[in-house]
Image 1 (cartoon, rainbow, N blue to C red):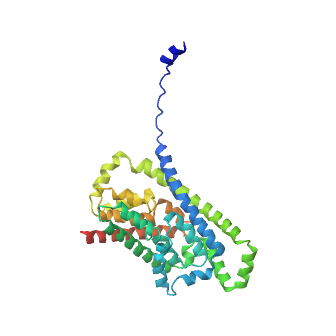
Image 2 (cartoon, rainbow, N blue to C red):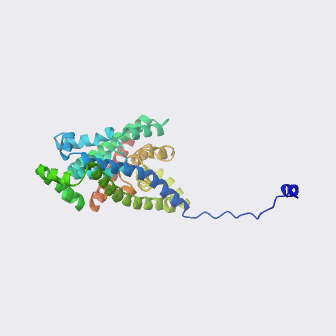
Image 3 (cartoon, rainbow, N blue to C red):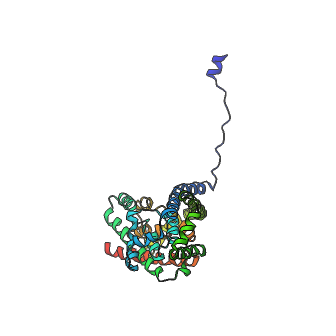
Length: 331
């Protein structure tokens, strides 16, 4: 009987394969971006906490040249020494501004750091192997640096009261008051507890603040990616736009805005494309790290909404003009 059962195993009715959920791709995209970005936000929050606990506000003045213009230019190059991606840079910039870093310098570093850093340069060069990688890498770093510095100069002309969120501005004003009253600042610092505790409190506060906006931005980006952008009926229209020299760059910039990729990996996404011209790919690689779906909400933790809006418009126009100019040079 045992042998018969072995040779004739019992049969079971086939289990029907469940129909894939239409929201499955949304959750996959959402979790992918969330898990990719949160570690960087945590790292940025840790750096922010260290700055809050141990970095003297007077050190910021000694780190940069005395002249405002030269200080903004040097700030745009700090990404070479302190490479921080776009997800991690916002809490760092928030804390540096609270410590007294001029807004123009902060914006120059914030916009340039995701592009002007060795990791991004290496990934861009590797992604464009066989497609003149040195040209694309140098163009990306050069254009990103110039646009970031120009944005820093433009925002340095605006009073900080018109740029910063009220709670950020209040911290800046308190920092200026403490600078004029060193003894009172020392008492406040002593009363606030040990350096490690101050670091932990600042890290927790910045992480929760930035992560909330990051999750909202990732949700919107994932929704647009999976439920709207890749609809089959849109593909033919996208190919027609790619063949239009004037519209190809804005299309890829819009794609970069929606995809919200990390600057260290976005080159691998666009390098394999054979439809769009190189100038449009350059626009994708410069605009995305400076301004995308998740960055709108992250920037809003430091800047007023109208400043974020006009910053996005300005960066969009600058990236478009720069990509057009480089396209003419590459012909």
